[in-house]
Length: 85
Image (cartoon, rainbow, N blue to C red; front, side):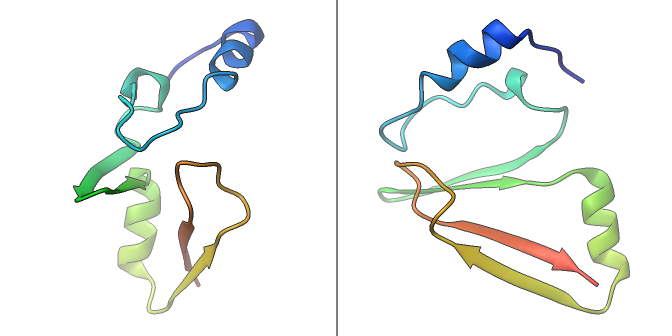
């Protein structure tokens, strides 16, 4: 896992990327949380999941997919989530 002080988190929060070509510091993420970083032309898709989340998706029969545009900051425009039941 990882650990940050409040000051480090606050400083990092003040440096949001303004374009999709930013360098993603995987050291700031839980181990094996970033599954893929896909770039197609000018678009970028970051895939996040834990091992337990992927295991759950393998076991269930029904997946629900939801998208929203209101919770992400630029340069991103959409958040897609997969839910299992």
